[in-house]
Length: 187
Image (cartoon, rainbow, N blue to C red; front, top):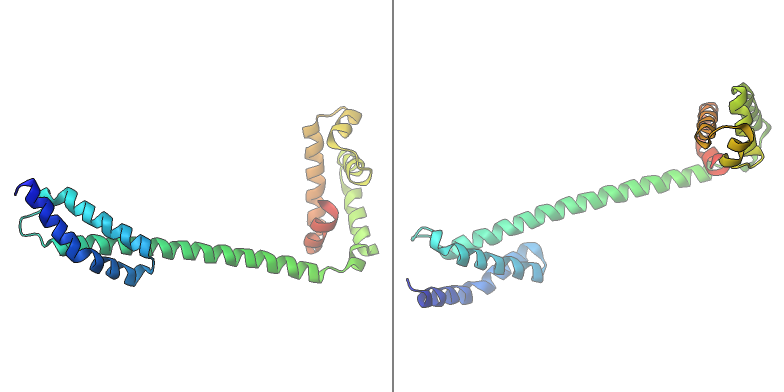
């Protein structure tokens, strides 16, 4: 076939089936621009590959198969996207519910109770002397790491290490109160 004949046949094919194939894709995608893009891409692929196809290839079936596969891929991606959104929403809801439950369970009286202060005092008293001193300077007197490091002739990293060590001990001692403590006392 010559080029003019190919173009004429392609135009006839396009004019006869384009709208039908768009309606077919719309039935599944419910998105006109995407359906039109897929059909246009399918016709383009047919045109680009026409010389490699077998002579008895059913052109409308070939093009519709491309449209169908593009729709399937699109719907699979949409399904994955919706699942990810749902999981993110579920995670965000869980975090919100946890924060809400923690806040509702918060008893300011208990946070400042003698029992809580006693747990903290006993834990701090059990710390190694250098760790205890660094923790008290930072948390009770408000000294920044840099100033503590200078005052005690240590590196800021060493101060950071001792604060982390003290906080770990407090977390263990106060594990039942960690949410309230994290919000109010430690951070």
